[in-house]
Image 1 (tube, chains in turn blue, purple):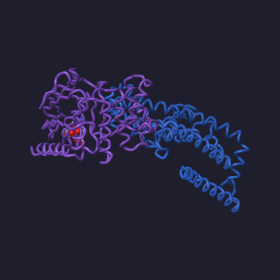
Image 2 (image 1 turned 135 degrees about the horizontal axis):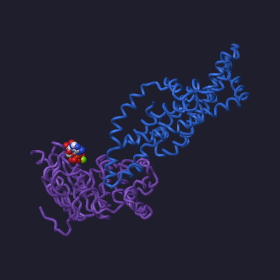
Image 3 (image 1 turned 60 degrees about the vertical axis):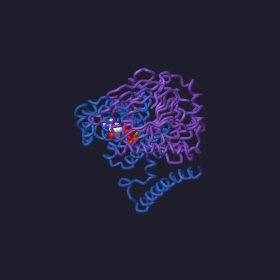
Image 4 (image 1 turned 135 degrees about the vertical axis):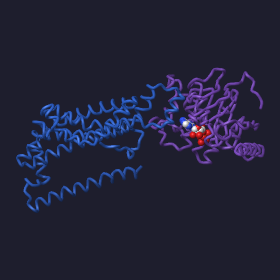
Amino acid sequence: MLTDARKKFLDLLWPILISVLMIAGWELIVRALGVRSIILPSPSRIVETLIERHDLLLANLWPSLYLTVIGFALSVGGGILVAVLITYSSFLRRGFYPIIIVSQVVPKISIAPLFIVWFGTGAVSCLLLAFLITFFPMTINSALGFQSIDEDIHLMARTFMASPWQVFWKIRMPNALPHIFGGMKISITLAIIGVIVSEFVASQQGIGYLIKLAGGMLDTPLMMASITILSIAGLLLYGLIALVEQRAVYWQKSSDISGSAGG
Amino acid sequence: MERIEAASLVLRVKSVRKLYGALEAIRNVSLDVATNEFVSILGPSGCGKSTLLMMVAGVVDKSAGEISINDAPVTGPRPDIGVVFQQPVLLPWRTVLDNVLFPIELLKASRAKYTERAMELLAMAKIHDFADHLPRQLSGGMRQRVSICRALIHDPGILLMDEPFSALDAITRDEMGVELSRIWQANRKTVLFVTHSIREAAFLSDRVIVMGRRPATIVEEVKIELPRPRDIALMESEPFNSYVRRLRKAIEASHAH
Ligand SMILES: Nc1ncnc2c1ncn2[C@@H]1O[C@H](COP(=O)(O)OP(=O)(O)OP(=O)(O)O)[C@@H](O)[C@H]1O
Ligand SMILES: [Mg+2]
């Protein structure tokens, strides 16, 4: 037990130590060489900006987060639903599964300008892009979870006269849970990417818009502060899902838990 | 071969045949099992033992013949049968107790009513201390004990066991045989037990049925008249070993065909 706790502590200690060293090195180099903040602001300068302009940053963070979470929720709901349909309909499985997989080759970010043509600039385009890039990993992961069940388990359930309904709720659903969480962890990061990229091209607000605007004004500290606050938000969202996962998928050792097939 | 009196007959398999497409897995197998009799089926790998067992369980269709339980034809899975598979087939997200209660949930019976029985079964299998553990925290032998408890939870009249100990090491395997013999002694059931192990069959059974190579037919039937309760010392005794020799000869003869 003690060694377990120690191992966990060390696992955390090293990355933190290295990060601190890297940030300190960055600060030192910027100061020693007198790099101008328009090229590379020092970490302390970024923190200053975060504090000074937190109103502006937060005002733009909320719309981005809002779209990220809604796009993510839609793709989780939609992905699980489609996965269930694929699992139970051999027509859908054979007809659409290959199409879904082949469509993964299309870089979905490249569709963003097309959405502006169709839906104009604004929330709808951002939301759609976030949904589009997160939907497939979510669907594919969940479908795998619903289907990757040992033949023996099906046989066992049949000898005890399980109904299809019972098989779904008592076997397929719990079996899919780790895969669903794997899909969610991939999707949340992709949802952020989707929203930010679409804000670059299709929005008058949000962190993506702010980064573009600050870039246009050569306000590098503001850009860096935007990226920082966005990363923190992303990390928190991911951590939240990982936390829920640990509770929900209690039967797997945490070292077994990992995001599976990506998108 | 002696006939079982009609009154105590529980399971009847008559002229059963099974085809998987063009492959004939079972050809004309007939056997009767009496109430509370322990019958083992011994036969080479791939001869159709699991197929026969699954047909009795009502989860695999037969191609011809009849299977009946208490004179009623078997048409599908039934609540008075419990099955133990070669692998424990436990659900990893359920605790030991919840795995044992799984059939109760599926049969929509009251969990509360059966929890006590589940604990008794676990105690009998000597794993009650692990009731709230997850399967991954158990050893292979312990998992198989859980799966035996699960098969017994709804108190089925018939227990079907398909090589339940073949995934275990030799020492655990002998131990489990003794355990099963003890559990059966305390909890009489009609048992159909499939195995590769001659010693296991001789140790556990009232009667051993030897099957030949595919397509399966019955080549020999041996009544094991050893006193019960049986313990591990019996395996060293001369009467036991003479049964083992007799069964081995029957198997060798069937291979010579
Ligand atoms: N679902 C199936 N479809 C086609 N063939 C099958 C199927 N199940 C079993 N068979 C074939 O039927 C034969 C008997 O299989 P079965 O599993 O009943 O053998 P077994 O006696 O239980 O073997 P083992 O001792 O190795 O478990 C084998 O040749 C197998 O290939
Ligand atoms: Mg078999």
